[in-house]
Length: 140
Image (tube, rainbow, N blue to C red):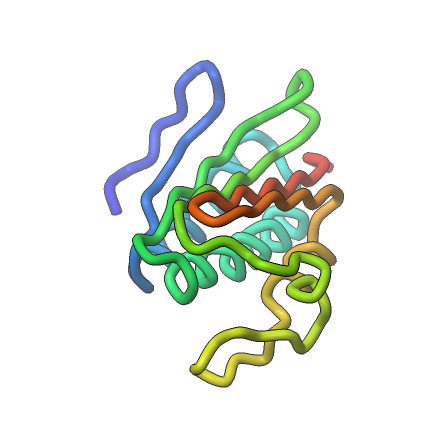
């Protein structure tokens, strides 16, 4: 991954299509959070939540997706947004339950619920062809 630079708008994006992209997303979020002044503990919580969401992009989306980091509300929030054009999540309430998985790889099924528990705000919208997840964390 090349060196990260952040523009005045304080946002950066990365494409995630495979496990290398998941690791790149983790590095992007970590670098972004620390660059904007988030505490190391809070940054690592957002990194872990991002890892769960990015892994889902690889496992469940047909073509991967994009992870975007932003600084919001006068430098008080860090946001990570995931976008993909995959098949969608048919039952979001069911998918948010710990232990639920549609993966044939026998996953623990805790990705979405774990990500939600690691952040201050979690929002998900999904339909066939488009899923958007937004996770927000106070900087400190």
